[in-house]
Image 1 (tube, rainbow, N blue to C red):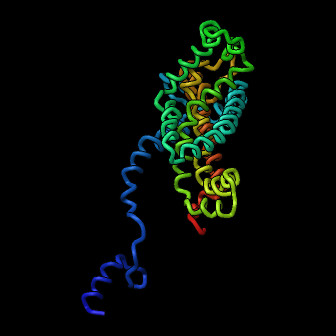
Image 2: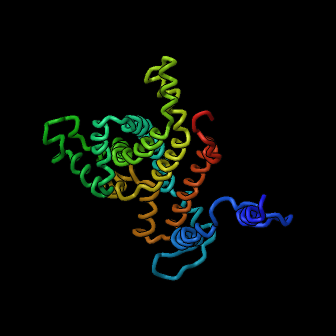
Image 3: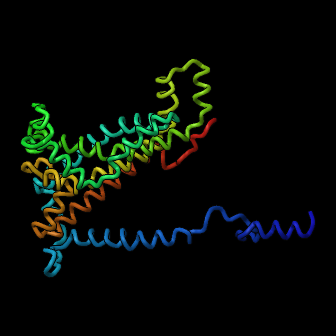
Length: 312
């Protein structure tokens, strides 16, 4: 090797290791993450610490802040409204996941096709993403109105029921509306994932005589493993924070039939002026989201992120 090549190779090896030899610097510098970490710290980490501290305080939002220790926690964990909100939030979270996941996968697989008519239909599937949750809530509230809604307009007796005014149907109506809002987003994730699956896998399956259904269960679904874990995390954690749509459609009613934890937190903090109690609910929501996210990643193996490319 020439002297010039030796010098060039030495410069390329980069940083020195402990033995005096030079080694490659793998990956980008941590300084690239600095702006994002600063923003995360200012707008997420510091407010989070403030909420945790406030959960041990008494504060009405205006007066002096006083120490209360575990008093807020004991009061909130023994409050029937808080426990009811926890139960309703869990029901809505599980039900929304059960409804949205299969529909999103099927729509995502359908839209991943290269036919032009599928791209045309995809435009309509994505329309709910263009509307704000408040606009959707107002629209559905009027559509489902038993006196002036779509059921009355077309004479459909089964739609003339007071779905949002009946404690037995209000929560399930919210679940369907929430699913209608967010299925397009999750379908988009699955669509992108399906298009990343190597076409050679399907070609080999067709040569072996596998039909469309067999290809779906033997190739498509296994290849969507990590997308499923990521999407389920987004879906479940998102379900823990629904507020605007619920507030506009039912305001927690009838009675407390739809008083989910985020809405209960708002009512306690800004209507009952109990910021300490509201902070306790906020910390509970955060803890649930973290535990569910870690559990999904651990069960799915998505934290390892092994390659799913052909031949692996």
